[in-house]
Length: 496
Image (cartoon, rainbow, N blue to C red):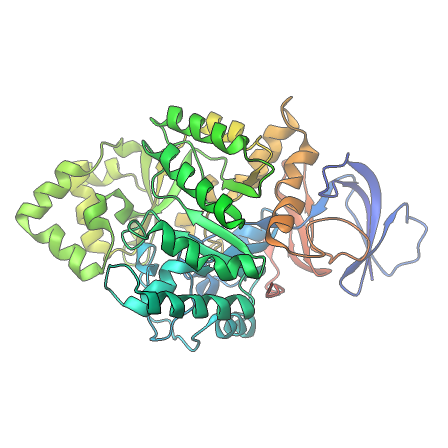
């Protein structure tokens, strides 16, 4: 048993904070209240620090960047009080993988050296469980990945029989524990998927009462149309829908405001969206390329970059950017460049900023991610005040030795929002905590987590005055303390 005493408890329900003690027994919250006179062997006096439910990060990319396997502690998440992460977004998941291929994963990383010993969701989850993980993990099944397993590299509509096969794969994945299905409409293999095919694919999702997560076709000038299309699909199917990483991109605030207005009218109709309250996005460097060249096999893209005429066309079509506002985050092949800006690199090489992007793509063989300052931070914060908004990181977890990823974009998403709410007249701290705990748990259908309540699983974060994690517990076991992971790999696999 463990007694956590003298805590300022924010229980995740949206209720007012209160002072109290929490007794943990056999991995569960046993009692809450004034328990100071209890004779318990293990006592942790937190001296008025905040005690909240372990944060549930509804949209992460540890699977897309393969840090589920390379950085199993997921220390960056634990340091923020995150105890549960959800993967498989944007239409791309680690399963199914019937041929050993990860269709769509090249949009984030090239999975060299990863031994695929699974085919479906069940095999994937068993592999992660056997390997161990520092946080709880659940996943969507990616529809783009499903299509890739059927079509290979072909880009076309599914036939009637192929749609039947896709629905069988989806049904199997949901039966094996997938939280729902995700769709990436913004990628080359997703842009042309028909409304009819999407509705067909969502039939087993509706039947099994699961979730539909969608990366929109356009987040800029055509955002309103993209939102309208998804609202129509959600309403016609009745499926609970989560729009991924809906953030106000600089220069497109008007479209964003109109889109949020449309969503606000649907706040009671099972439509949600997640957003990260940061001015920085974390993206694979190839996302700087025009759409017609950024997606596909690496060899094909590199050939287009090398060919003189197509290279000139690519450079002319790369959108303007401030090279000071793009920073190299992580590269396995070029780690000495981590932390450098595109301006640093282009100046050192004596080439233009756009040429620098292409050269870095070639030299890194697409194994590079960047931070880009492209989000209107004030709008992003206001966005999260909406009733149907959930805070997420949309980031991979990593261990702290990966210095390139040690950036406020990846480390302060939750603490910065809590600080904002603490000083805001527009949202209370208890409402902010709810958006990271019981609300995502409710959307995802995760039971007995996300609230500090009797008989709930003891996933608990103790936060200091700066809203950074001091101690983190998963199922009652301490996994993070005083700024570092305890290497317990205490995470559990979450199945629907």
